Image 1 (tube, rainbow over the protein chains, first blue to last red):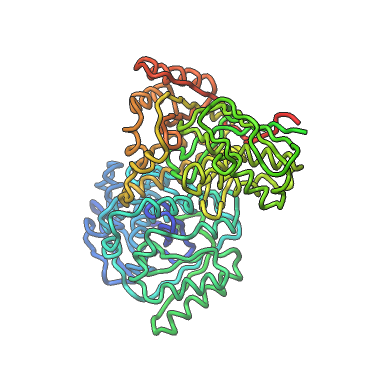
Image 2 (cartoon, chains in turn red, blue; image 1 turned 90 degrees about the vertical axis):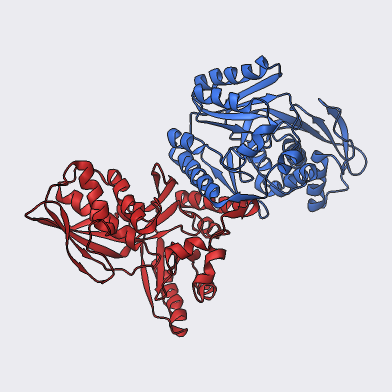
Length: 309
Length: 309
């Protein structure tokens, strides 16, 4: 018996919610297969799509998270093998490690007949993310697992709220083939910010949340200005402001950095505008000689899913 | 012909929304009477309830705001007199100057047959608040005028959103007779905060807003912890932490400083808990020899109203 699951990419921060907001994309994402095998304990069968992931259960995000779950369930002696099909780029700002951690945990839980709910799995997936990233935070993991737009009140207690998704909200993400390490992207941030900027940011953040509840696209648009993180990180992403300007010109409600970058996300009202915007944004990277992949989709409301039994 | 209006007190900041959140109380509040008189221009007839307000139209918050409105309407030559009945304390953190500014503007607009909507009046009332306080901000003015729980995305453009009021939400405010000047209360704040505290605060703020939309009292409660302002300002208010502890013990969802203080607000689910909590909070001030007045009410959803024609 084996189970194949899909765990989607995600956009953390959403501009105004550093470390506390994230949403899931419909694509790309990782596929992970879990199966029972003879013998004892968890192991990795194959890894496709990359040669950068370790086969050691303790060092691989997907198996580290899955192992933590198996330990919790007292099932560490079961013979289980995971295949990891990496179908999204590393260091892209699309929650690659989070998707692997979610996939590993979700696949093993499904293989065992789903003893835990998705919400109960969250902690174990976040442990996997912590292995990759050094900090215990759920802004990619929670949307990848649960789907939707997720607000994290507190990363330590994983106190999360699923926010409403306005019907016509379409996400565009452009991934340029420029590597930015999450660690560098964190280190560039100053440890202090001005109270004035915090006030501006909080007004936007709270209004963004209200805009989602009201399906008020204009309010969402006016709220999507990041006063704190984007001005510090934009230097890491070539041509960021040129692309942002283009996104807004093409009707984007807002545009900012996806997670730690270098991917850039924009939110649009309606698919047609999103497709045109996506093309125009990508073309700027191409014109500058940087290969770039666009992803355009609804907000993924399902999160991790079982693809086949 | 004369018009008497009521403009309510308000609680700015609500703990987690410094400069961007406020709600209106049902009481206390100011009453302002506007009438046509012979002669030209705006003047003050009588002021009751205080001997601290100036009779000069240019220096009095209510008339300064009303004059700005009359200038805008091109009605500065009309003979209009305002009586100001101050029915709430100064320097209390209850939006006293905001209530006067709102009352002045709202009374004059009503006397003229309401040429402007409440929303259109907001700017003029904020001008009055600015005279009193030195900064153009609407976190007391907007709830006093419009009622409800108001979110201000941006104070400069007065981009505001009215947030939903959960049915059983009851506000308690305790005003101790200790004066704290808004100016001192602003000056005590450090101009910089840590990014870490900003993240904690934003998680709480966004979750507070979500909690209001969901009528999720527990989420509202978990969200009402102010990591930024309260720890800096609490020193200005004697026995603050003792009273906060009592409020939480009595079942308050949260408790923090109302505006710039010294008033303390708490939010409760249900009237009976609120009444008991209010009594217990007040008694701590009394035990320490500080006279204190409690106000317990629903969130005032109407804001400024005409009392009689």
